[in-house]
Image 1: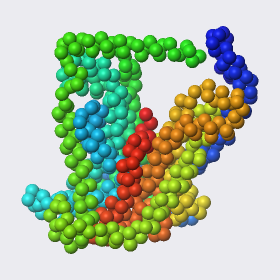
Image 2 (image 1 turned 90 degrees about the vertical axis):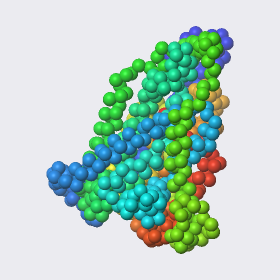
Image 3 (image 1 turned 120 degrees about the vertical axis):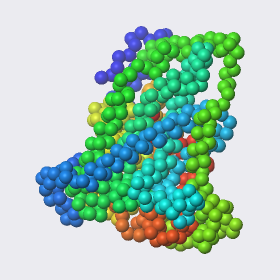
Length: 318
Length: 305
């Protein structure tokens, strides 16, 4: 159990070795914290995170209106799930939100992150501004955009010359979901920028210096050095974005409440409305299970597609 | 063991360093200055995005400073000619005080629970040889993947069953639980950096396991404790999901939920609504001014780098 110690310590370390010997003769109990130290945290987490995770699967086989006790309902919820047109529609909207927010956030976060990792002047001032959205709550951000885009007093009204009378952007079923994607991106781009900034700072300068000798320009450096060096960060950031989009909830709830009509009702909102305004908790649980499966599948796919294919070291050849 | 590991480390360090200086000489020979010309494209992108961030923020501050009638007639982004703080008064009079207090209570208790649970747990995980501890840690790491949104129905069931529905405790418990995995992860990786020799030396000097926590572990991990505290506090302060499904009465309402209710209550009184929005973000923005580094490391703690 105790790892073997080098049997012949150098003379200089002999005194220390004796001390180590003495410590090793003490029992584990006297030297190391036991399982009891970790038990409260494990139990607490099990009770309020793991247990709900198990219960959501159990509840998906029950019928429950939020009061009284859940009643067993067999496969009922799952059969209904297969025939729910609104569910299919919200699934498509979720996928659209996922793809669109990835496509919008990644290039901007990557570009600004790489830029902010450099040594430009004014960088500190702009960086300080970039991270403000991260500090505001989702309802605050959603309400800010709701008033900013208000049909009568906000930006669309100022743009009446261009938009004509179609100033109710958030009330437009074709536009609302794109605005939701934009608002979510506005909130989360700073976070991914920080990831890319940290990673870009870790790219060895030697690579750039060597590439200059080979005659590479900045554009070429970006594609041949920066991007390949950042690929694990791109995977991490992508996973966080995909899972984030599958589970996103409060931003759209406050921004549009799923409307107009059901135009922005994505999967988690469908679950919320089913459970907490329709009081069909069993069915909502089945939708929740679907969300978990989808989120897990997305992150596994992202890892498979990009992470394991190229397992060689990032600093290979240095 | 330690001496064996050191040697290859040193050589790997030496290689890039050697190459680097050779590259520098070569660069100087081709006349390349290490200071490059500014990256124009990325700079423009950064500037454009700064604009996208700044304009709506400016808009809410500017609009929160005008009277309601001025708001209806003002030019879109013009700075108010007669700025007023009346809207802030309106927001504070509409129950904002209580929401602020509730949010503060939720935040303080959530952070306290998380730190009290996570620090000993991380200590045990980094030092204990118990297999149970290892298993528990794996459970927490898997738990990182549990989306809070997906478990709101069973959480509602649990919280009503233990009679904590519509109480601040009901918000605190799940909020703390969902902050725990990141907290334990961040603290564990920082505790693993404390050299084994320090533990052994202090144990030899007679320090008990508990004493080691206070004289060695806590002082050595102060910065990651701050990170975890900030991460947990921001999550608790800004959380909407748990308060939304686990409380209903006005007396238990937190800020985020209060903001959303304001929207219905104030109708088109946008200046008052926006004053409430500004007020809700003010405490964290002030923190940002004074401790930007800690705040940023706290915000990104969830990324697990």
